[in-house]
Image (tube, rainbow, N blue to C red):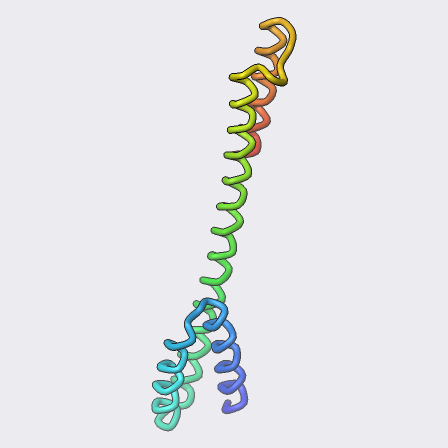
Length: 114
């Protein structure tokens, strides 16, 4: 169990450093070292549980950043579309053709957002 405990601590260190939690990791290690001498099973469970929570948090943060990037891209596309629609730079033809292009672009944007 000591080998698994050490590997768990190494994993926990890597995950906490990725989240920018260097100082809290040192406090966690000192706490776990005190508990380890009394009951290594309990300490191992705590380390592995904390690893699982840290990994889950890291995954969720990655999803949040991807969604933020996607939203920024969609906002930029929509602003570009709106600016060109308002000025008429890219749209020529009859009002019916412009309305058809507008409807098509709006459908594309709605599909991207959904």
